[in-house]
Amino acid sequence: MDQGLVKDLRRFNRTVTQRIGALDDAFLARARPLGQARVLWEIGEAGRDVRELRARLGLDSGYLSRLLRGLEQDGLVRVEPSDGDGRVRTARLTEAGLAERATLDRLSDDAAGAILAPLSGGQRTRLVAAMAEVERLLTASAVQVTPRPPGHPDARFCLRAYFAELAGRFDEGFDPRLSISAADAEMTPPAGVLLVAELHGEPVGCGALKFRGAAPAEVKRMWVAPAARGLGLGRRLLGELEAYALGRGVRTLRLETNRVLAEAIGLYRAAGYREVAPFNDEHYADHWFEKILPGPRTLA
Image (cartoon, rainbow, N blue to C red):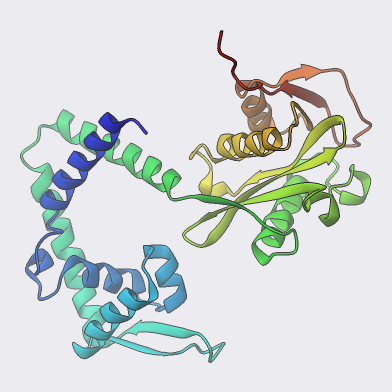
């Protein structure tokens, strides 16, 4: 990792934490630090399961429990079994908690206004645009990509969403039985692999490889959730599949796609895949692509 980039990022973190008051014991002049205030806000008016809170905020169980316990002691939160599943704990705001959350919202608006007020109109626009870009990139960095068994619940969610999207976008719908197979066994090592991307504990994308002995491997089941598009996740999934293939000694990847998936076609071309003559009889394919992966570098 470039140490200059690391240094710049750390300096940015120090500036932001100081400017927003994250170092204060009494965030926004209230009687609690930022951590408790953020948990209070995330619980929201409808309540939220504790495990979902933990995933959304990236907190370990012990620390979140301490934050919730403090809010309970202040009479702002109650934690109780979920209505639908007694094994799941749900945090809900009390009347006092709802009032405190509304106050935090008002004070947060005032604090944001105080940051913007000294700036010119052009500076405000630049700051907000830069913050949106930072938010997008920080969100992208929070995505985790890991191999999953095809039967894993997150994998099943992605595959169902993938099939449903194709059915809605293809002119003739989509029937997996008419398509070249990518069955569970074909996406399970050593025959293949299925990668699943998760953001805040929720599945947001997938991609798979089918190995075919000495023949080129096939890229299958590339999908990114609509809410996660624009984060560069498709390119990342493709890159991770390529790295996995190289680790298996595979040098050539192939894939096919439908003409209506213009964004996918653009992704493959930008990633170095070249269009080739049809190499299979995929029912739904209009374009076929191939990429020769780079071999290990040699010293001259």
